[in-house]
Amino acid sequence: MKETTNTFISSVTPEDRPKLFWVLNDAWEMTRRSIRHITRSLDQLLSLVLFPIMFMVLNRYVFGGAIDTGDITYANYLFAGIFVQTLAFGANYTTINLAVDMKEGIIDRFRSMPMASSALMVGHVTADLARNAISGLIIIAMGFVVGFRPNANAKEWLLVAGLALLFTLAISWLSAILGLLVKSLEAAQWIGFVIIFPLTFISSAFVETRTLPAVLRAFAENQPLTHVINAMRSWLVGAPMENSAQLAVIWCLGIIAVSVPLATYMFRRKSS
Amino acid sequence: MAQKHAIVAKNLQKSYGKLKVLEGIDFAVKPGTILALLGPNGAGKTTTIRIMSTLLDPDGGQAFINGYDVAEQPDNVRASIGLTGQYAAVDEYLNGRENLEMMGRLYRLSLQDTRDRAHELLKQFDLVEAGSRTVKTYSGGMRRRLDLAMSLIASPPIIFLDEPTTGLDPRSRMTMWEIVKQLAKHGTTILLTTQYMEEADYLADRIVVIDGGKVIAEGTPDTLKAKVGSDRLEITVSKQSNFEKASKAINEKDVKLDEESRTISIASKGGVGTLKRVLQKLEDGKIDVENFSLHRPTLDDVFLTLTGHTATKDTEETDKAKGKK
Image (tube, rainbow over all chains, first blue to last red; front, side, top):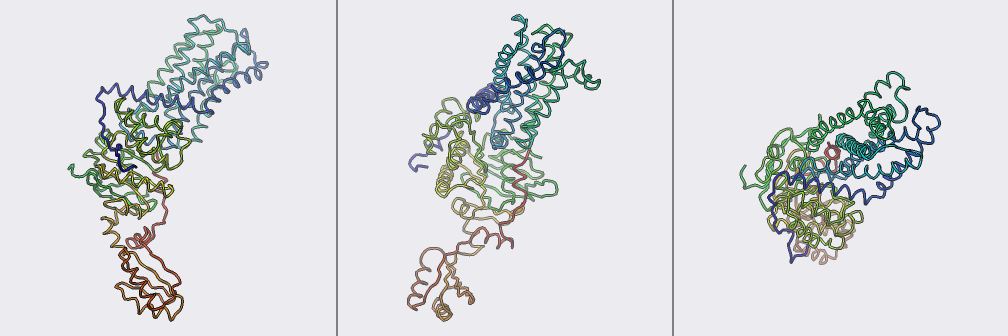
């Protein structure tokens, strides 16, 4: 603007680095951006803290007296279900945040740049992991407040944490696909609910699957959330494991293997 | 593709279903010059920019940026351009400096270059103090400036500006204009779209007028304006007798008379020569003037002359292009 100095013309050239360096650099830049969005948005911070508390308290006291879970107390039974539901909702932020990027037009800016195609999604997904790590700790603390008494040892706690992160990763990448598909912010907000609510209700999250009608039971016993929940429940309070842990890991890895390349491809997909 | 043109569009075509948005657009931009795509909403301006910036595939035709084929070498194209869209694409939750530094790294600048460039640009664009504030607190003009600064961080040889001043107040508009002029002066090639004749006139070396997805005229601002007609001086006198006196007194080349409204319209080449002569004659003849105005050709006049319809027709194109996916 000032006539005297024309520094905006000063010439710079890209740094010469291996391709992998830039893929990681771009992922880091986008991660830093997404993390700043969490820490600088009061809405996001509030929902991060309030949702898990609300889910835990409401479910524990509303359903707690009405549901018979046999040898296990309801607080002990419920914990894994609420834990996984909270993680699933937390992982849905990638859908919403991608829809926001699209609405603000910044996604077009990123698409017109020579950056790695995966970076934007990696950023949002990593932010989901950070968000879920915090939500997860709050849920665990709330669990203890409402009567959750796990008997897990250190190794089992580590397994729970590992599966929680793997599950978040899988759902977040799936959310990335939804985020790149939806046409509006409103759609991004409801689509997560429409998918996550049925998936958690028709699972072992709140009731034992054997109490469900045949069709629902068949679905519930063969969907990934049930396996993730059962594996965690077994590690935490000693409920029967069967082969839930293996199936949970296979499901998560399978989802990741499909959704990462698909979302990365979709980022560069052009308008028709 | 010959390097003598920084930007080349060859027979670009694009339709959405039955709606033909681009029906064979051709133009070329020489390095270091400004080309304005002038046209109304729905003419295909945004669609053209989206194709050129690798966001959209054309149905037919080719585009070359900095010698690279948009379809074949999109990464080379992306490394050669800066894009500033119609809506400031900045990150609201980051501050100005963070926005710039993020861009610098994504454009593969070294850490040192990124920091230096961010600092330079903040200074250059009058955003030093705002640099540490989140963009949420910025005014519209500040956002646009930051948006443009972000496009410039890697000093790309080619810049696309999609309606860079739409919605800006007059002062911010002037600031943007000065920045764009200086960029071109220092060798950056600029393709901009606008709905304003005035903007194209002020900034562009060449103007391509598009309407309904076709190029309907092309040339320097002066040749285009000559096609439309010149500025006109319009004088309305107060009485019928004055009208007759005035029409005899005013002895200019291209005069149009409208007896009903007692208006005399005189072609003017700008400057004060005609104005002075005409006023002198009116004063000498003691003729009362009721109204006096200088009428410049507007985009509407350009369109009326070139197409037979006015520029203010809306089609779905811009929404289509933006609603996208």
